[in-house]
Image 1 (spheres, rainbow, N blue to C red):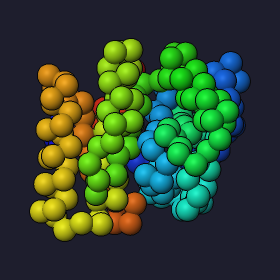
Image 2 (image 1 turned 30 degrees about the horizontal axis):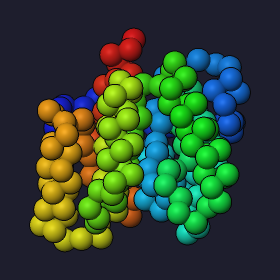
Image 3 (image 1 turned 135 degrees about the horizontal axis):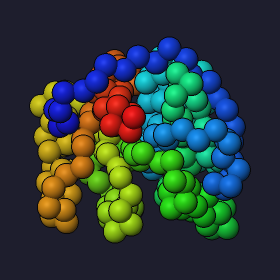
Image 4 (image 1 turned 90 degrees about the vertical axis):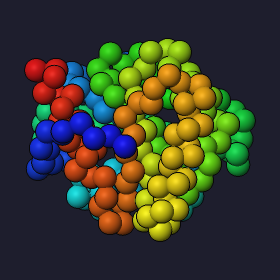
Length: 207
């Protein structure tokens, strides 16, 4: 897991700024962006709300595919938290899936302010083919990213550690080294300080 000494990061303000489907529609104020993405139902909105200590910031839903836009939230008036649509919707019409794919790829490839893309994975499950393909694409395109295993409270500590290790080993079949890896729980707040500290480190390095 990510063990570099992290900066202290405290979120004192978080507010929604805008939604867009193309990078050209982003907020005009240029600030570092930290984006979050994952398969449907991975717990992305819950994680964002936990990080910001605001249960209503990002809309949570039991219905996969609720986020269809790129949502910018300004944090501490210094950086953007970006909530991206998920990938891999099985129950969505193909036309809609293709449009979501275009929205995601336009942002990932064309946002010059993207500092890190956090890829969320369910800590209870084996990584799926679509996760591995998406992560591989990020590597090939040189997109800076980190991994967050969500729902870390759903298994006992040993089972959790074992499953995360299994997934990391699977990644090491394709990668020489792992990106930063975090384990989180929106229920218990686990991982919050580590993730925010990592963001803080990057912000400090950009000064």
